[in-house]
Length: 340
Image (cartoon, rainbow, N blue to C red; front, side, top):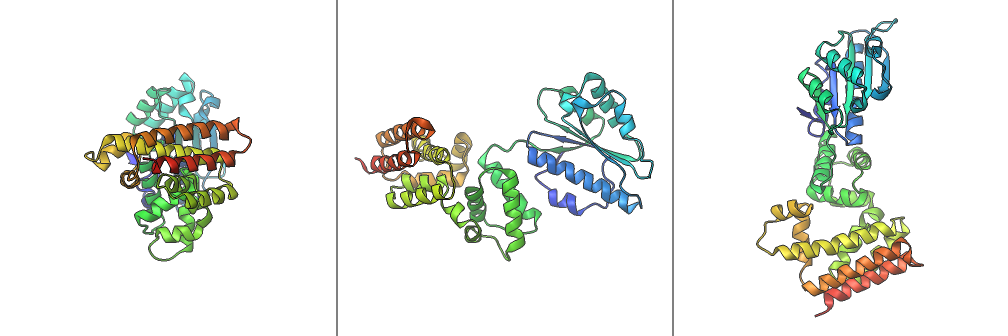
């Protein structure tokens, strides 16, 4: 199977071969699926243009709205020349007759048509997914990226896609600055690649996202758990001034304190990689938390957890001022670290 994250640049730069007659895009990651569809359509258009055709008609339909027999009509050649390009979305929602028709078509596709089928990949419509794969449809996997390590690999891939090199500091800085939304990460990586020269570093990312990169909730949390009260309060005010939600800031505080507890409970003997897999954080984050644990005692971590639990309720409506609730939580976290 081809993986849409792994070699997107290769697919874009190698249109020498004819596009697949049927491409199956599988997975719930919307951005990756949309990109795979766009690239399949672009490859079909390029092949059509190379053959001297106008590209044919493009039909974009949802499988739930597709009637039995309609696929045959859609894949018929255009009256003005050129093969058809048909996008069938959400194949898991296809009616039984339509699902059977899609499977038969994949086994014997029309010579002048390109069909792109998307499927969420879950249990619903699984039989169709199996039939399409057995029929020989070219498959693009677009799995949901849920782990921090997966999003970090996505960012690395975006820089490779643009033909640029970026160090690990740049990858972490971009994730801290932009967050986990793949569309925003792709756009940010593309902008950095087009607007800068040389190897992309954390300093380059900070130049473009200074207010955002340095004032996220995670930056506030890092300063707080490290006992740096003044820096944490400064970053808090900066984050709020740039529009970061108080709920997200408190969530970052809670995550920072929870990681202290989970990493501290594991002991020094556990490897960073094994612990990262267990708690759902990248290994570099585990190493950083271990450094942050210096000066903390288990009872202090427990009190800090109570502090962020209380502030969570306050920023969600139990307090007149969410800003004051966050400042109070930060002061309590720092006090919990300093207490003996």
